[in-house]
Image (tube, rainbow, N blue to C red):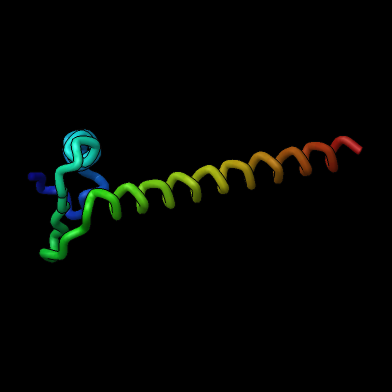
Length: 73
């Protein structure tokens, strides 16, 4: 459907693919190299990225709180 190299960057795979998946259609997203990824696999990959980003935000928040506390004492 799109010209993006990775379906995770395609708004159609996120919006349309998810809607079709919710209706129990089999959805395959095709990568630039011709390999296919199911909508379930794409969602799993999105969740992994989201969790990593959240872990990084938490790490930064804790780091700077410790640094501020250390600098103030």
